[in-house]
Image (cartoon, rainbow, N blue to C red; front, side, top):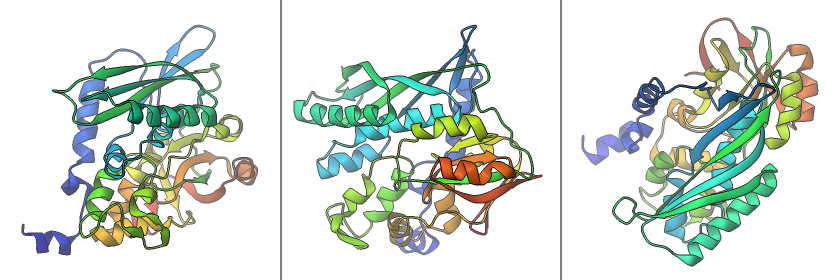
Length: 325
């Protein structure tokens, strides 16, 4: 395929370098060899009187944007958010976080910036930073990689197990932007004919890089209302809106989602990305979704500063913005 054909057909996540289906198959193969209780968002260990929840995640290729623009001050927020939000989706109260920074060579200034973001993220999430590890791996890592793990606790009645029932409503909560998923596709798109230092057309006072680096929203404040009202929860991360299927085998119909922030339309236009691919890859303006009985929907929406965006039906799959995913 020549370059003109690729542009005409439009960029995809797989063409940019990430095949979600292959990744999920590899993950399933790994999990099948492990013991313990693996959940869709967090692993739960029964301690007798409560559960210990554990999750791990990293920042991903958003780090390449940070390196390109020379600013690592926000990626620590992303690292904590990606872990804490998964605990919240499981109904687990986040308690503590530990980071793992791998570098090809130590750099004091970069480490200080990363620490600044980790401290800010921990404060927003209400978790303790209880240590971490910095590994110097010159033959393994180029630049740096940042990941971490979060732990939390839940009573036996606290986890949000699902599945929601047909007739339940879906309540959506706004994202802060592109968060920390799909950056491989976003980076490929926006650098086709431009650079991270270019003015961001919807807001020329910002650069494209700054728009991509907007930190992931932390949803720890949703936990109380979610435990009280939710019959299912989904953190909209890798895989985009197909994450709703993690709540259980139902059909999820979203007909009033939030409008995507301008960064998504910018990525779509730069990469000529199909709408279906955008919704399968990105959160598109909604970072967290809760299912709840219809008669509780408005109360829940008010409690989490969200809104009713759709409903649960018999069947399977996700339908959002008129698209079948």
